[in-house]
Length: 252
Ligand code: 13P
Image 1 (cartoon, rainbow, N blue to C red):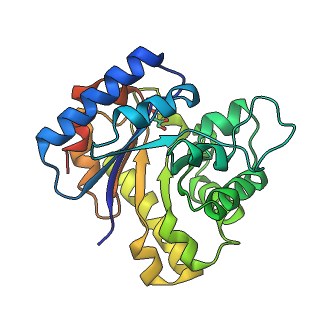
Image 2 (cartoon, rainbow, N blue to C red; image 1 turned 90 degrees about the vertical axis):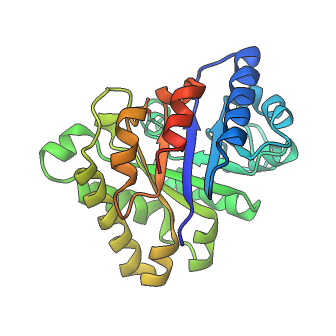
């Protein structure tokens, strides 16, 4: 059985007070809702990670970083390493988000190195990818997604995928209010699983969780999550409100 996961990517939102408040609200609601098997992750901004880890110490939620550098240490002003994240109790990192690719010029090559560094440090990775609108309009979405996955992940040994969750986030659906239809999500997730099967075999492909991200809301989560190859969601805007986020968490 694949893990069902709902992760909230808070992006560059919430100062310390707001981060602690939201984390505690989410933790309380998760406890109350007595979830059966769904893993809940929240990803605050770097500066608030340690305090959120502490505030949710006994809760059934995990805390993830939104990014990290691929080097362990050194002259990389403004950057944060896997080892540093681990030292404050963060064991999961989101890598390859389209906003990192677009605004901070992250390439597949850099992402492959980041994935390596996370895995060497025994961290879990939520690896994001997805096509832009032009790719979809020209029917190239599968080609683009396949190359993003291959370039950043296919140098890895099969065992590495025990620590990797994939997140398909069509860029045209992020923060736009426009969601992929449940059928579009399912088609792409099935394609991603087939891509994994072709390289690593069916058993591995069937074991990897693939999340959907892009304007996932309480109103559409249930239908999207009901699809066979959708194992949960990576949530942006709706993760900033505890009630909305929990409505999505409990949508399975
Ligand atoms: P929205 O849910 O705001 O569209 O953002 C999705 C996302 O980018 C999650 O990483």
